[in-house]
Amino acid sequence: MSFSSDVKEELSRQLCAARHCRIAEIAAIISMCGSVSISKEEKYCLRVQTENLSVARKYFTLLQKTFNIDTEVSIKQNVYLKKAPTYLVLVKNHEDAMKILQAARLIGWNGEIRENLSLHDNLVIQKSCCKRAFIRGAFLASGSISNPQKSYHFEIACATERKAEQLRDIINSFEMDAKIVRRKKYYVVYIKEGSRIVDILNVMEAHVALMDLENVRILKEMRNSVNRKVNCETANIHKTVNAAVKQTEDIKYIQSKIGFEDLAEGLADTARLRLENPDASLKELGMMLAPPVGKSGVNHRLRKLSALAEELRGNEGGELL
Image 1 (cartoon, rainbow, N blue to C red):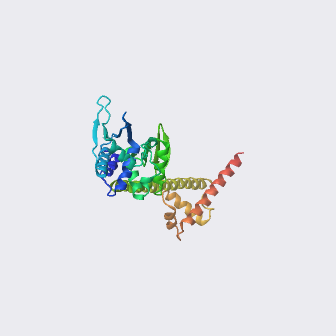
Image 2: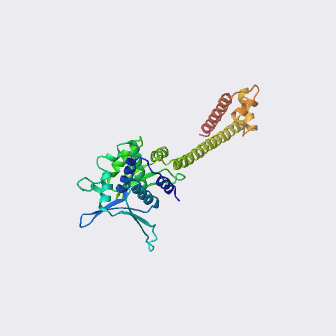
Image 3: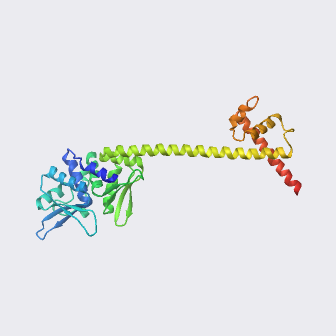
């Protein structure tokens, strides 16, 4: 199973004790993947269609526990296209369908269906606990989350911009930073930052998935920290080696042109030690001197030697001209 499927499986096994929270979750599922058909006799039939068995099971349980009504579940399998089976949960009884739609505020008391089964005035999500339930239902119905081993991405696809804006505002009421992007015919509410995805899992009360994600984040951060340190140390080593090679070249040039006899005593000693110990660090060179000299002192002397080498090279160029 994918990480997204694991999260949905965990959420599908949760059942709120409060009836108002169950209604909010039902409202989200119907709004995201539900539809209403009306017969010639103006009888309503409510259907929810999903490719995820966990969603179908959760919706079926919510209806049974909340309204104590009979539902019909069917499975469609397209053998030729080799697609995943589709689960269809039907409420065929008109009175039962009306009861659900009215409780979820997806239909007016006069029987008028809200546009695209959108919520009306947010009446079922006024409480914080109901907002959590609504987000949970929306994610179950049309959400996904990427494998945290590869990337951090949480999203819920909505059929209309209005639904996406409403869902984004509900999510952001928990101090998130959800955004909306248009993708083909859908409006996708998404979160990309790892810490925010941890927060949204906490909001939906997917605590097992949250811990799994946190463990992955910790390991990735530790690995990145180690890599940064290794890269930094490698860069410092390259820098030190390149500097030592340049210093050695400058000192050999000085030796070939004027020798060390006319150099100040400190410069001459430092020059000889560098030639004898091309791989030594500045600190190690300083400890070899008598009396010992600090890193800054050794560096100052080597800079003087490099400046002298450049001066000699410049004079040589002038003589050639």
